[in-house]
Length: 145
Image (cartoon, rainbow, N blue to C red):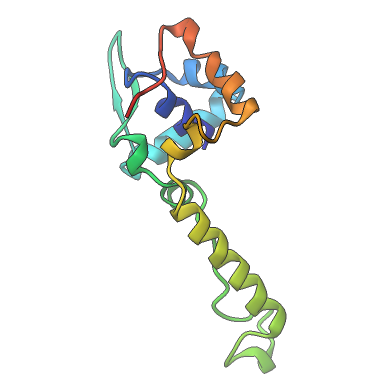
């Protein structure tokens, strides 16, 4: 999430793995794997060369958190008893039904939240804001879309 937020907060110019890792305080080796998954998932595009790096394929207002989660670490719904108990074969027990309902609510909340919303001035996050300020040394200004 933080990598995609860093790309959203920039001016749309490509950012290197190193730039994102430094700005968002994530290990570069782990970030590389996440960015590769985001490229395969079609959310991020990569360019090679001196001014190369990663960019979003769509504006932040068009990307919701569920899309990111589905690419990197999908939310698993409970469709049958995870314990393989015979008595639970036709329907979920009350505990697993409620756990699945909670996961459905998380999916709905993530689907209804865009990157632009997270970065909006109406919904500031002090920790994220301070990390995004680290992008300015790279000459990147916040996006306006």
